[in-house]
Image 1: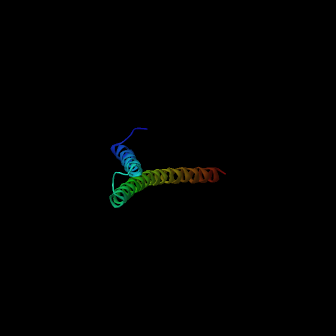
Image 2 (image 1 turned 30 degrees about the horizontal axis):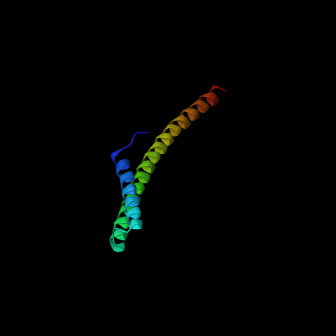
Image 3 (image 1 turned 90 degrees about the horizontal axis):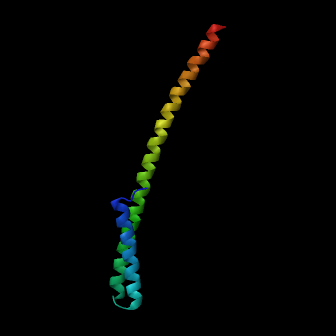
Length: 89
């Protein structure tokens, strides 16, 4: 599985949020600024996760449509074979 730019951005955002939380424990940023920063980063990571989820879901649904079309073709061939067998008798 190859890492895309979105995956790298996701891990960077999560790492940055953890860095800010650890920095807050140390006492450097103010509480308001830290909460705004961490909240923004968490929302960004959630957005990236949902985007990835819907991309995978779209690919799966396209695959199911292809399989359904193949099954319909197989069903038509089976119906033709049944008709040929019935006509021989």
